[in-house]
Length: 448
Image (cartoon, rainbow, N blue to C red; front, side, top):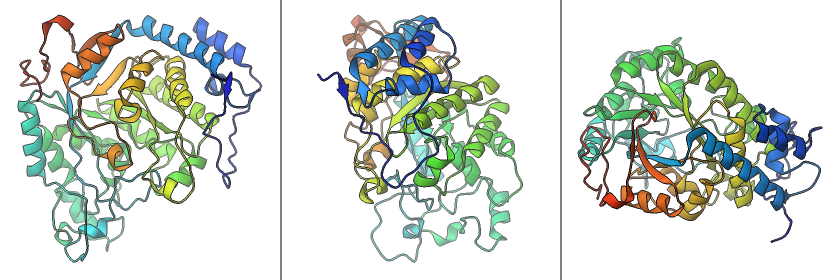
């Protein structure tokens, strides 16, 4: 292997960002700070993510030093356990008009209208359909239902919100449910529907929370309190992408901004909801943007203490508008993926758990990430739709048996966990066959 490998993620032609991966720090100093446990700053993270801004591309030998340091930190913080959650993805609708250029999950909302004459490959689920799907999965042993959806114009927080929006003459991306073939109900109705037999409901991103209070003077606290009372248990910190405005203006100009995302996450924490946090990297941004993003997540955790895990999400480019419009040619390289996991572990000294996504990385590389600083291996998910629609090819489901086999293959201990990591079941590989045990109706029966 060459000592250097050029990064595939350089600013694309036409994007002149203010933030560039240039620092007065040295790679050696940044690495020494990481090794000795001194809290890193943005310049340190930039040096580690680039393996030194004094040279072009990624220095593979330096990269391995970063990975080794992160793996030691992982062992110190969480030991040899690799956790996973037994969960279901139940996305309510693909209808969305936001127009994010990295996304191929959405379908133009007008295609769902009753008067639309044309093909529509998307979907919208009623609350009763969501309940049926979740009920079936609960019977099979899941602990968590995760729901992240498009911003359907007919979705309102509750009946009061419908009444307010209906008086605003179609502003705020709103149309009455009567305009559509399928009524998605309200956010409260969907959360109530998915709250089956004490299953953990993980839903309502900051972007969805904004949609649930658009056109009102309600605060994010108001929204999350109502949803918590309806059965919401924790909030996924997706829609973060890159928390730097000059990047968001390129890839998602219609989405909530950095400050609003942070405000919504603090609001969720303030009403007692745990959260996660993410980064979606490998598109038009550079390593300086990634470092700034990590810093903003760490500051958020310093303020709230509510983030249970951090999830790096490598951009899947194949079927997205960014690729189709020639704005990117590819996603992150494997070296960048490994460094993103490692530097997340080293920088986020107040977040115990770093997740490796087998949906984004695949099985083999996903396991490799568990030696680069990650300690969580995602969930069974049962039905994955968002990455698949963007061109991902690593599957939609993972069984408990597969988790046990994969995790033990790298000499680590498989642990079924709750969403908040408070409940844990360490699995003895000799006790198979394996099924979930932590869900409200789990009894060890295999999922399939």
